[in-house]
Length: 79
Image 1: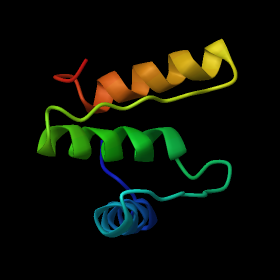
Image 2: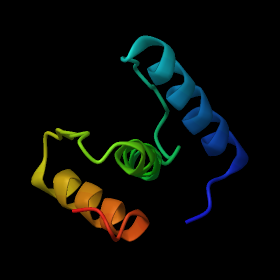
Image 3: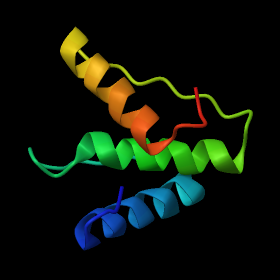
């Protein structure tokens, strides 16, 4: 799935912040593609280091299912 230019910029800045601080917070408005963004982000982090683990927390089952579906679409080789 191709990212829009603003999404690519967000992803690059987030990866840069993580490499400098080991922690960051990304904030984006409704419709910005947060699920797609964190799926790409986690996919890149996991590809760099197979020992990396991630936990995604959501307050609704529907959102959890959406997150899992999008993640698998973007990262079909990562469980």
